[in-house]
Image 1 (cartoon, rainbow, N blue to C red):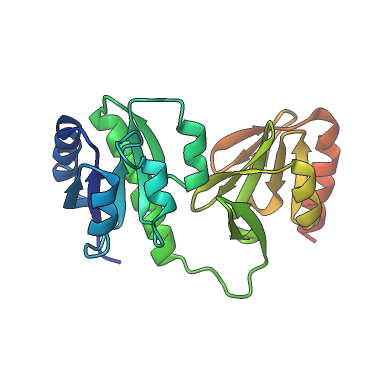
Image 2: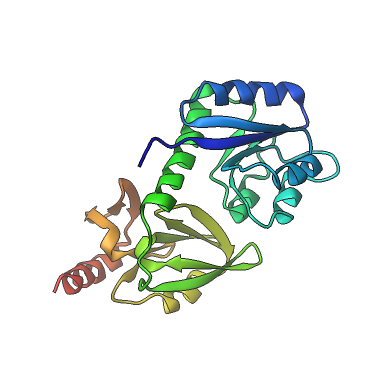
Length: 237
């Protein structure tokens, strides 16, 4: 596949903030600026005529907020929120945001967010999911979202919410770990900690305290170690 070039739009009611993001976009080899908008209404109309892969989106804007804009978009591009407020970070998960950048934006932070968008684009376009793969439906942002089990790395409890971590992206839903523990096949998934259920196929290594999945260390409860050893042995038979 040729080098990824994402068509980008910048949405911010501040001309100075738009200018700073535009400069970063023009300096990035994987991005192409196709539009600038100063409010959500203009954006909604503009996206009808402009093919866009990625939006750098402010949240607090007059008339319609960034969240309200997304609620009104039938087909959503990838989203990187760029805002001066940290209080919306958790809500951004419900909108499947690629990343959430706090103003003022540094080049390093910007590039890290873009890398996530590029990798997500590659996964969607280069790694088709087998049609016969098992899946579950998860209610996210008022819609039922299909989650393929082979792509699910682990889920994590976050108070009244559950965070899904997949090969493509992360998202948070209002639910309990217990409900998903019942849905997931016990021969492929194991609750290794009160806050984690992991995909056994994704485990790269483990010790008495941690499990490592894709270079990320997750806690392993002491009384779950024997269960893990038995589950891994059974999965290899």
